[in-house]
Length: 379
Image (cartoon, rainbow, N blue to C red; front, side, top):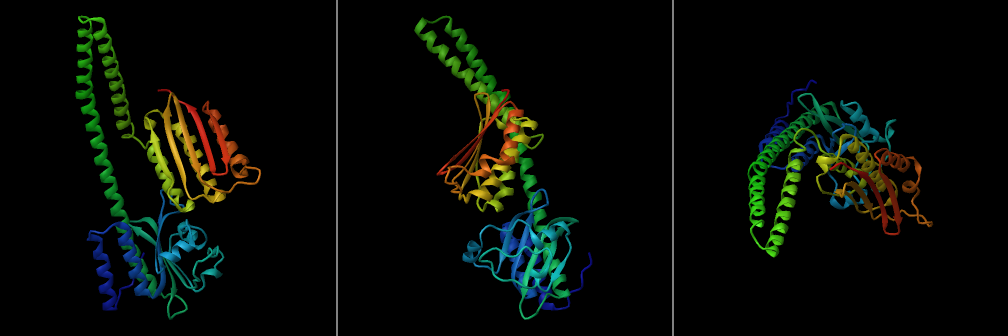
């Protein structure tokens, strides 16, 4: 991709100052917002936004804006996920300039309370050949549309944003590696030191129990049982620590899916885990559990008008228990929500549960809906 030399010394200085911020101690959202604001100022755009692609690179996981007040953003509602013209830029990551965005065949219109926008400029956010998202600028003030010079400036800011996103993700990976190394060290310490000491203490108590009176022997027996139980719990913790070092466990996958669906929901679903889920949930089970989470949360977003939802995944008494609840009010007079109690989505999830030897239940009430999948597991 070629760039035109910037002749205006003021614009060149401001661009360099923005790029130098990559070395500043700023959070990624603050840095990206500053780059958007500078891009707006230098191109004359009234509004600007930067969308960061999710892991699948098919929709937007984050959407940072400039030019809108907090009240205006709240009135608009959930952030875009990548439809219409924004979706075109995701499918075809190349610069796009429009005099009238609403006249484009791919335009899907604006949601209620969204300010009117006419001219549009969109460019891909890239770094080292990798596409991380798109930079959008709208409503060039004093002109009917954005110019070629504006496009080159936007590409420069988009490239700086791409480097910032790439650096942030590399930093996250370094931290993940450090965490995994700490997990390995902790697991080794627990196995080689703590468990061995507890095991030795248990053997000593067993030997002592042979030489004491019955009442004391009974108390020693209870203490030995507590030690055995503690050893079992520590071993489970060790499996939990090392279970995700070789691949992505169900915890990380569920959390990533919750983040992916956040723009569609308009809020962050609460996610919790109990028991050694990464250890006992197989890859086959994981596929079906994630499908249930996606289907349920998508239904919450589309049909329930919910303000909160929770996802709980637990291992209880040889059963993997997935419970997804919401406080939605989208319930008919008959007390059912057709999108949840019927249709192909829930029927498919019920078949998934049965394929794993489990079952699926859906409860709909005036205060919300609860979906529960129970699957037997081998401990």
